[in-house]
Image (cartoon, rainbow, N blue to C red; front, top):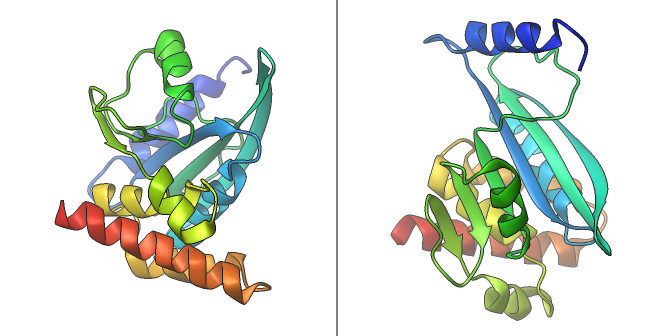
Length: 194
């Protein structure tokens, strides 16, 4: 980060944090192949359908033998001029339950997090959604399920916009549209109903 970049970013975030506009930063974590990039795209597209400005971009890195993926997402009521990774996210989503331990060690626990995990984790909305993923997709693909949980938990994006995003992203495969919309809807409804 160049000198002055942090100050510009803070100034942009502060100018967004008034009554009329806001900037929300989200980071999605998981292993390569778990749908981290697609999840980021879906959030950005859903925000667009809600009439907001958005951006999503991936990053990849190694941790031991694993190739890990992250997706940085920004959502705002104003045009977004930042072009850098998200470092101080407001929300985090962990597709892989093992990865939260790595990030807690590095940066400490977050206040608003959605995790694919069997056990409750402090300051997190933890949901074991692997069984539901296998029921819907035939394998543990959890990205759209966690987005449904995230949308219900945060109300940052609407269910309708997330469903439209799935239609748009998977438009070339009707079966994927149906399965992903089912996953989003069921996870959203279950989270809302407790």
